[in-house]
Image (tube, rainbow, N blue to C red; front, side, top):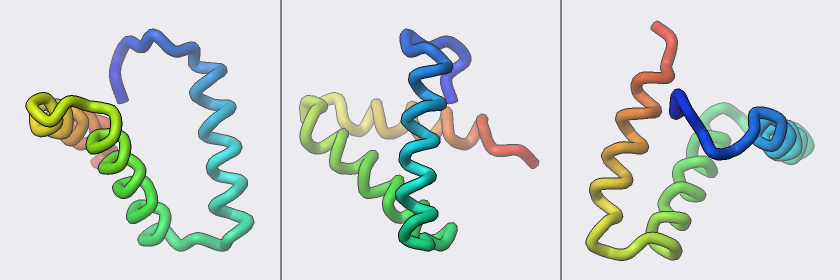
Length: 71
């Protein structure tokens, strides 16, 4: 999503591959996968971000998601 990241592409790809394997194991549909991703994002915001910053970070996340979608 972001153009630049402090995380290596290798680390991100490794984690994505592992998560995809779990979703495949459970035969998760696209709808369920998106629901899980949304729940993870919500939990991260609610548990790890100060209340006063949550809305702004959620909006930036949503903007990054929208900009990464292919038409």
